[in-house]
Image (cartoon, rainbow, N blue to C red; front, side, top):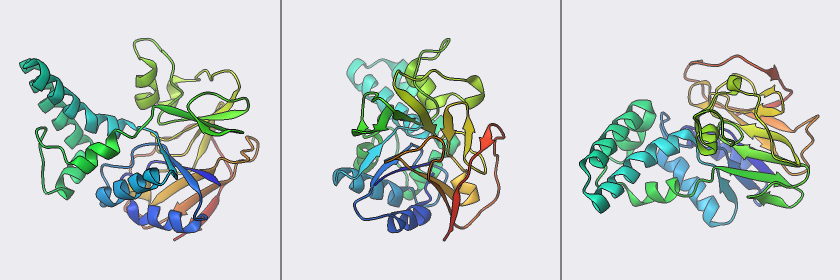
Length: 258
């Protein structure tokens, strides 16, 4: 079995229940934003990293992982070049990440700075891919005939001033529709939180605002039927509704109450 999981944002309490729900040999595809905002970032990262080490998880990079990597990249460039502009950008991007939700991660480590990123955090951050595909051959990094594209925000492609990687990490669905590679029948994304999973063109969005709503969406990928996908929303403890987007067409799903 192959199962795709939407944005967790530190909700290890729900991830733990999801992992118990599916068979032990299930392969998971995490759509990014495993970290930030939530209460159990380190536990979520550890679980996902261990699954990857066991060959049971594929990790897609989200914009929050990208924000966490930016300070480290700039600081490494500074060490190589001694260019103070890189040093300044490292501090600016570290502040931006903290304000966007990274503060909860930093707090769990009892504080760190651009000079001493924790090794386990870096290990996790560097595992993420920009896009992968699920189809008859399983999970691949190339399109298959009849496959589903998996990326965080949208299918990667050049768009205006955005690079394909930028589009995959940051863009919102209402800036679409987005082209799909030949042979790809649909794409699945997180990034833009909605109360329920929604279809928008040929794109399925499954970020159900888990950090606040306690709702984490999962989609079964093996034997995927675009007309009737097997979707489950795991309902855990709710904090508040939070900011949710309204677009697209709600799709049928099963609620699993935890």
